[in-house]
Length: 93
Image (tube, rainbow, N blue to C red; front, side, top):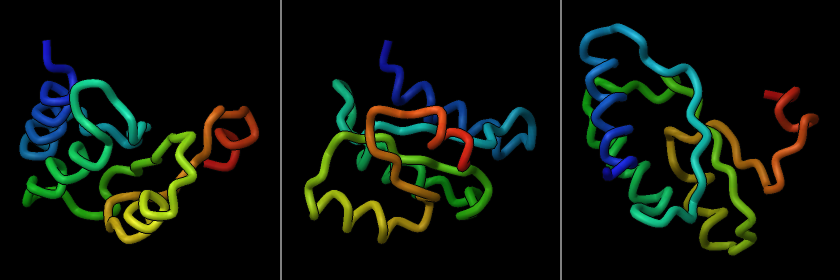
């Protein structure tokens, strides 16, 4: 099963129907089937998705300046959170 594509389709259907739209997505930049950036691009292709409709938090151990720049420039991303995810970081959300 292609979980990233299933997740994207779920988000699209939930936004269009107005039912069960997730309020938060935790997204890793490095995933086996699809990168976090590819996932974000797919979400950007959902015309009904508004920038603040879903809080998207990037979870990553990447400190690559290019990755950080791309995250900061993406209108859908609420915040970058470095791994490992701590209870303090969750409390700040």
